Image 1 (spheres, rainbow, N blue to C red):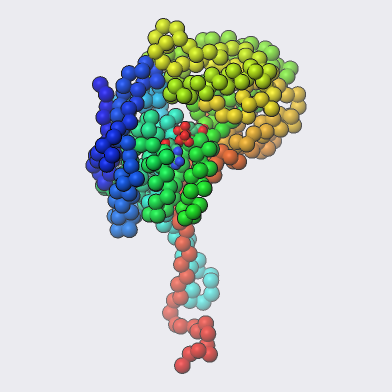
Image 2: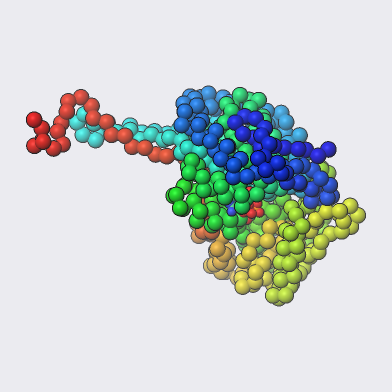
Length: 494
Ligand code: NAD
């Protein structure tokens, strides 16, 4: 049955002022899944107005942090209660395997619990050595209304690396989900109301980035935009926000490398490299889409990788055995196939995969399986550009220095992995890798306590960890004079 959604504004559903809706069809089988309200500037203005009222009245920021934490924990309970239902929506709209969608939902609940724990610990300082009768206070205040703009690949995780932290900090929000995958955001907003979070602190306006996202970024009563998405749109948002110096946090694209040294546990590395490039159909910002492998073990490693890749299960998102689902939309599939063509044209060797899959029921959807290119040079576009699909570019190296140089030879800097049994090498190389995250002898780990974010053109700002909370807070210094008056300008006194 088709799901039908409205905006979520001030604790209630609200029809779009345009009366228009965006249809989402399944990327796996083409059937209509959902209809989302096509938001307008007027809808954004209405949502911001409610959020701004909540901010200026202190209706959320004056709620004691312990109570904010209690409500967030209650909300996490409800997300866990409804995890199966939410996972189906997530899997269907994105096209991703249900097992990963379920993990994503549960992880979102865990992030909420962590953010709730931070609400108890918002840091402040008192300075008592500023001079006689002087006291200094350093306090942290919610920034104000925050616009959260998120992409389609991990609709819940990308949202929950922001939303509970903003709420823990005391900020009301207006959310702009991807127009392709808005379902779970709207569902969890209803759960927030059920948990008792006051109306007006979570508002959602669905629709196009060029309309809803643009207006949100320009709105004078929005104090901060926290954006996850492509580097191209991130730059646009930063430029627009700069006009009013609206604060911006950006989680953008990536082109991570998995660096495999000959002395690594190669079985473990095989697993990590394959998992790192196929998770979420490779539609993953930290996907390990470049394999840098020491020349002496390269041939054997790649032939074993191809054998493992043949066993990956590709199919319908709701099938629990499936490991790769459908790509997000037709235009994206075309762009992926174009990159595969360019890879061959530029001289890389297609060692495995590389076609649209059309066997049996796959013919109904947008499927590309694991694709492995060898003999990839740093000048090739498949080495440099984010393809956002399970396409791996393999390049060999001879020395540690060459490996580091190759890994850093990208405009991105979100994550990298390295595989070696030599602790010195692991520490030295990880220090030199220019990325916000480094995985050593593992890949795609995450923990709520560990900050996440990019170097270089992968963005700025951090999510998760204590940093993830502080992003949403202003710092205020207050100087207080106690007791007797000491003149600053004595000659002006009577
Ligand atoms: P996108 O940049 O096209 O869109 C992201 C969001 O921005 C969507 O909601 C979109 O509607 C909105 N948007 C588009 N134009 C806008 C504008 N002018 N003003 C305001 N909002 C606008 O990205 P996508 O295709 O949805 O997602 C894929 C990209 O996201 C990849 O590049 C991926 O690497 C990146 N990503 C990064 C992270 C991270 O944490 N660093 C996580 C997930 C995805």
